[in-house]
Image: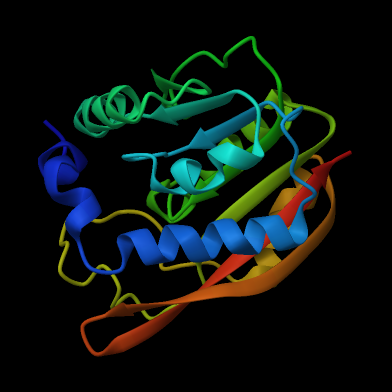
Length: 202
């Protein structure tokens, strides 16, 4: 069982989580012309808070996560809400075979900084997108390591430098990369800015 499996049952009740997802969804709407003709993928979906905020604006949404606990909670929410356009799958792009399906939109919230080898994931996103498809990444700006200081086994990134991530996105096959600040996450007595990076597949 992973740490995310353990946290899954109470995930939506944690302070700020629903508000954060709503704020990021609003930022995505501001930057991307969403439509019900779009086939979308949320990677690192957790319990699906971001996709639930966007599902009325999109067509079919595939929600991918590597945590079985999170996916179990998500399936129950989809069933309870009788949502027709959301399909959960177990997927870890670091190790699993890439899906055959392609998407018009890929989005992810606070997932990338947990992944050690981000370039492989960015290349996977590029592969999964249709030509001129759009990628949206919401994640932490570069920070001093305090955000995960209470997790001694954390081996990801202490956020991202926007310029460096922009170069990584270009190397992975993206163009027209732009960044905005979409939310300020409060943890303890600290505020951590979240950026939204939007990029188009070349």
